[in-house]
Amino acid sequence: MSVTVLLFASYADALGTSSLRLDLDDGTTVTQLVGQLRERAGARALPPQPLVAVNERYARTDQALSAGDTVAIIPPVAGG
Image (cartoon, rainbow, N blue to C red):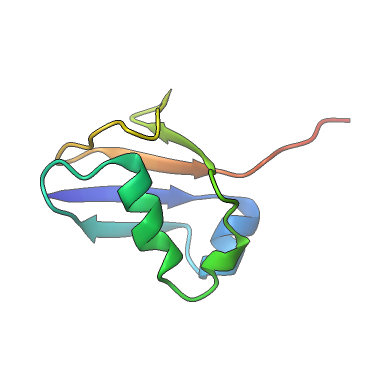
């Protein structure tokens, strides 16, 4: 199955792109997807458990992904 991963701010800078298309095994979870991202150059910028949204809703780490999902890896933000 294929999913789209969106990266923002420092994560996009570190990984060198603002979006990726990944082919994953059926039943892949958010944690497993983050694990695959960690294998890419620059991924050390990701915290141990980044905030993740799937289809514009915050996701649990054990949430299984489906074909066509859009997964956003959200960096910390600060207001002022």
